[in-house]
Image 1 (cartoon, chains in turn red, green):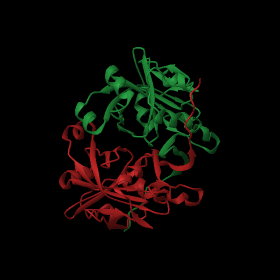
Image 2 (spheres, chains in turn purple, green; image 1 turned 135 degrees about the horizontal axis):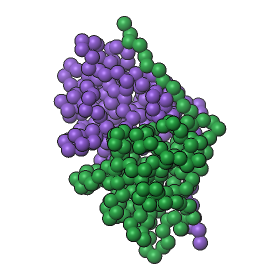
Image 3 (cartoon, helix red, strand yellow; image 1 turned 180 degrees about the vertical axis):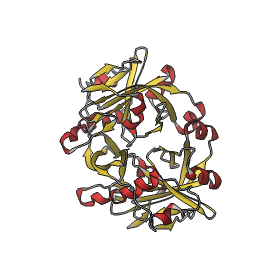
Image 4 (cartoon, helix red, strand yellow; image 1 turned 45 degrees about the vertical axis):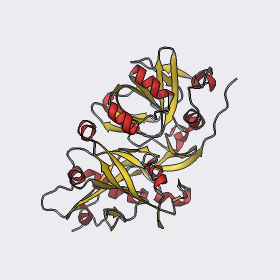
Length: 195
Length: 195
């Protein structure tokens, strides 16, 4: 089900504004947090912006390692998503969030970052350091170096959300643990000029 | 139906990654385009990042005026959204996109920007100039100075998407005019630690 996505299609994975899980590793330390705030900024090369608050353990690991992974959770992972978005990975002495919550993961193909099993897409990214916007807006720009997706719901460079694969639909955080599921697809057509 | 939204809740309007319409005015010139790529960067003050390509007429008007409005189209406006995202407002001699496509609009309360009728939320914003990231990533940071929403679908600082108001659900662009509608709401709960 997991299949590589061409890098020129990577930005499409987050084109529709899903909540992502940001996973990180630096040496022995690793973490995973939810981030509702991300967006593509370029298709080629595939570049994405993501907001990572100054208070987070994730930010510490991103700055130390210069890399992060974006995992796209689906409806089936709503509780995991909310949980890792609510609790910090910096708790003294506690096991990391992967262990504490029994979150299965596998290694990314390019950077070896921990990718969350059960998600529907995964991207490993290198940080394009921009200290001013990191400080002023908590915004990190990254470039995607590997991309994969679950072929049951993303194929040929396109998401394919249907009533039959609802548990695999991406999540869009409304607040306080309520997520809109990417649902019914509307196909628009270009209007003709009124004249 | 249109009601002011407290500025501390403004970022929630785009927390779930909807496609937006960016409307602009500078003197007699005005325009509206679709932008799939935006995200909040701060709740207080309410700040948002939005990607506006160098080739667009909108960017010219944003740089000239220092302001822009973000309108949130709903499923009923899918064709309008796709249309203004596909065609440029810079066509020589043509009427502007509001006139060409019969797009109703009204003036924003703070900045007098043209807001698109039939949308479900509207924000007027001032640009926080960041020439480097504008050039390198086409990314504009803005601060919201007025916010309104349609009370049928956003009330008390929360989106309320139900099966009964499907035509008012926000749009999330998958590519090539296919939009996922923000659909079924999943309420997550925090997991307990495995130990």
